[in-house]
Length: 103
View 1 (cartoon, rainbow, N blue to C red):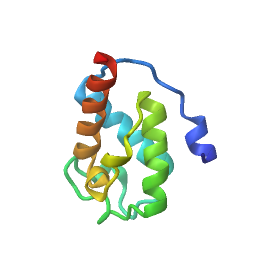
View 2: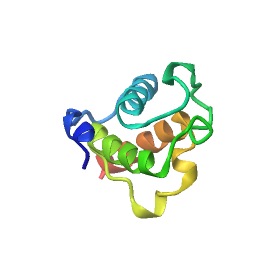
View 3: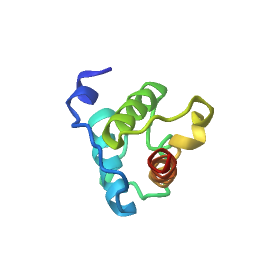
View 4: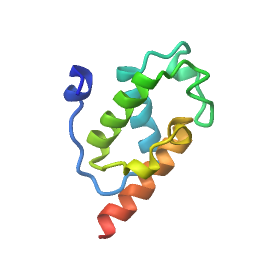
């Protein structure tokens, strides 16, 4: 785990409003990804890979999201489409929060 991911505080909130989740993801992207475009210029549906997201950034992003939202992304969900956009990431977080906190 990188030092940047380690510095993010762990969250235990069961379910956050969608826009809050997207804002948290943007904050995480600012800390762990080395995007060519400024995060504020990237729309929720814009392709993060086109904005410069690398495979290493993807791993750091996954670890930080798992820590921030207190979730675990199952291996079968790990694919390029999961990390394609802020919308895709927020939808995944919401799905996993519903699944993990209803169990």
